[in-house]
Image (cartoon, rainbow, N blue to C red; front, side, top):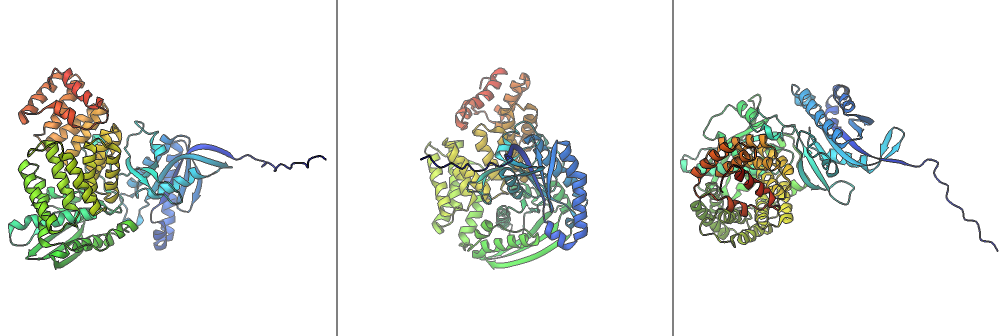
Length: 595
């Protein structure tokens, strides 16, 4: 008996065509809202931008629009580099076109770029490669570009802008997080532009908080008004929908009565907050008013009169008022972190404010004084994370600078204190920053990077976190990534001279000597007695054959710090690859300098 015939399934008449492509997805921000307000003009403006900006730029970069969906555009490129260059040029052209328009008339876009496998059906494309580009577009800032890690790998040294590593991000309908890189005009500068013109105002709501005036009638209470200001800045820095200038740069205007329009231009922000603080015993009155920077017009003013124990709640109210006035929506995570803000004992808050001022003095005696204040805060309220984080930083500073008889075990002590901070409050970014620093100097690189990435995620406007993550990446040998992070930090805090030092150091490691020289000299203009910037500048001169300038710079450095030891620096800095610091030492040798 013969076996029954086997029936094979009928093959599809056409095999599915697949190819690898770079996909650009662009979408208009606030399209539905603007359509509700003025449908005809919104649609007309969007079509004009497609015709005048998107279509010619996509064609110029050898791309092809394969789909229009409402306010969105999908385009295909054979090259990741072409796709990203096109995306950046589109956003720059859109920003220029929006510059003279009112907020409600602007056409602002988000753009995502992905490299992936796509399915071809006629002139249309489908599949995960297209879907991921759309997901990345949703993660971009208004006016910005978000790209996949696979795209970033093709960019190194090929385009003139730097992307900031946003770490792993959760993406809708995907089980695993995706590593995302981001760029925005006005929030990043090219490294060589550190001394350039006034920065561009970002597309997202941007704000600087000027030092609040002390209205207590006692000049000694000035530190308290400063502390309130700093806490408001810190609170705002945790809101991803804002762009917030850091404390160092806002406080450059302390003691002045600046023209708000001038502040807006110099810091590149749309809004400025100013106010006053009056303290009487355990009560505090805070007044705040927000001003439109370009026009100088007042937008709103509020007064808060509370017990000092409720100061955290007052700061939260100020932040919520600003967020509401600027129509910024808190993410679910940001909202949940604001629940149940704890009370604090007035003496503990007072000591926390004083300790921050003392820490900034960066002296051995100041470290001892700071430690005593923070120990007292812990005794008063052991459930606050910040004093543990600051104690870790003080201990770390004593170790690095060899202050106050510091021993090698200080690094482990700093690590223990940082872990205590994180355990006390996982949402306190300073805890993760101090943890990352201790881990980095212990050469536990992956753990250090993860901790600093967490700090960036918790406070996406905190310049200190971007600088810290740049340090980690630089020590790992990823100087190009570090420069992008330093650039972001510098935009948030253009008065923080140390960022210029780090940027110069990373540029030197890449052999970008002209840019490194600009950054290091700019740092020395802000801090003329820096021994470390002169150390790297002397090496740069040696590596570029300017040996007399190298020797002159080295002599100047020894005048600043006669006890400087290049060998100590070589052993101290936690480069994963010692060859990086060895090249710096070689620059000194080429100039005939015995370090």
